[in-house]
Length: 81
Image 1 (cartoon, helix red, strand yellow):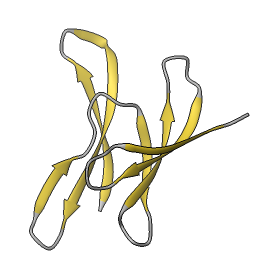
Image 2: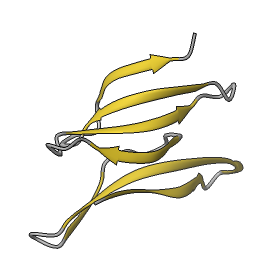
Image 3: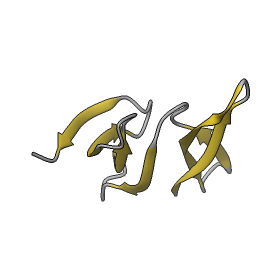
Image 4: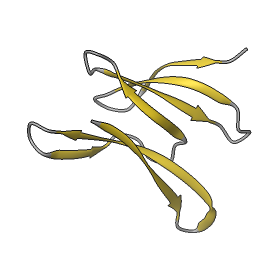
């Protein structure tokens, strides 16, 4: 199961982030996949090896990002033309 949580930078109260977390039901382990990001609405692939989510940049431009579910690295980013 994947979800996002709100987070903020402690020194700058106006700077907020969202993080993607994963929960493994088999071993009861919760893992923080990303940090200091603006990813929303995570959705796993049927195989569970990728996660699609929405990203907003500093200018509030939107894109779809495909993440590796093992390490959170960006595999692909799709921008709206």
